[in-house]
Length: 215
Image (cartoon, rainbow, N blue to C red):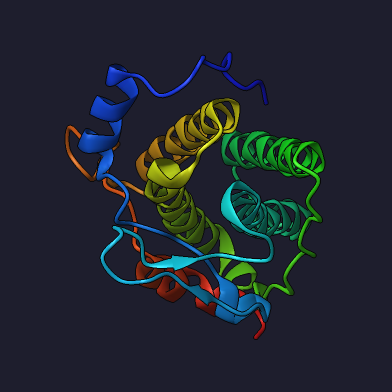
């Protein structure tokens, strides 16, 4: 994965993007599933809860890393399951899985760059889904990718470093492309949200991904 070039700082275009994307109100994190504590942010500042471990950008990077761990593990196991009978489908899943592994590496490197320790990978729970065959695997993949894209968008307004924001947005764009491809494979609309992507709240992400993580 290649990040976009960093900018010199906040700009009018960035602020306009964040307004369209939903601003700073949507925050996504899987702390309960991963066993980390939540740090409460005082009400009234436009944020819900800060993810951990770490603070600020490091916490957001670790949130994203948890998500990418889960995705990478799911696609690896899906390929290894032997349930992807259609060769075209198998190639799509392999390609998406390779992207997710690159995202893991990029986020770990970004955490090292800010002097933060990466979270450990969560214990995942996919046996029932994998046993459901190719259709169930693709439906789950579409669900996870759409939620993943929304989760990155939900964090955009909180990222302080311009270079890290560029990296997060480049991953968000990639996740959106994954979601579009998978949406078509399962017979859904390419872009279910309409003209503007919608960010996911913390509760929406937690509820959506909790079934796939061993508490």
